Length: 240
Image 1 (cartoon, rainbow, N blue to C red):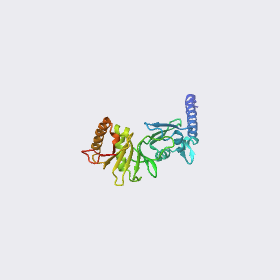
Image 2 (image 1 turned 90 degrees about the horizontal axis):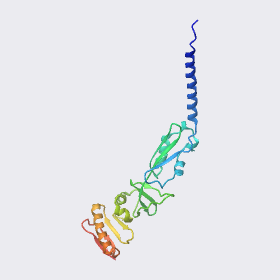
Image 3 (image 1 turned 30 degrees about the vertical axis):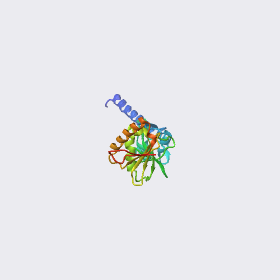
Image 4 (image 1 turned 45 degrees about the vertical axis):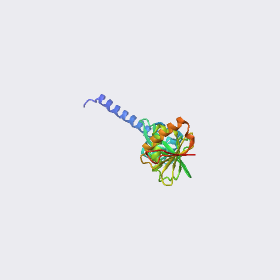
């Protein structure tokens, strides 16, 4: 009769025990509830949607994810729901090895606020962005002949103004006329600046800056009713 190798039996037994414990631990990890998600806002624009708003969007099968087990969480579905929200520019959802759910949110940036029959923002990519109950952005008001499916001209000027330090500081209203030409008004002055079309826009704005600096120095800004930049080689002013 051959001798029994007890060391071999001990090794086999140890492997079985470790395997059982691993399977047991893995199963417990899968059914563990996710708990409260960790929400991080990225970038400068973090005021328009709150952690509570995001948490309400983290729902699967009509249940909050905090009440669901790790193994049934669909990260793609949660990410899609967040990215569908009109306040959110980009969202990423991921889960740690211990079952913690995290969401990183980048909010949209408004550059102008339409103030006609409907009120909403135009974001930095020219898209629609609803007003927020949490925060009101200090951006130029957009008035005149505005339609949601026809925002390109006013968006192009708003985008230009947002990227120009002088205009960003001074412009308080952008008006799109019936012929799609653009007017604007500036802070602490009541005259209207008529741009016309956006052709040669940079040149027209440089002309306006030169006019403004001279008129401001001479303290005659309030003498004018209209400043016409339609012709890119001159500034034509109409007095009150």
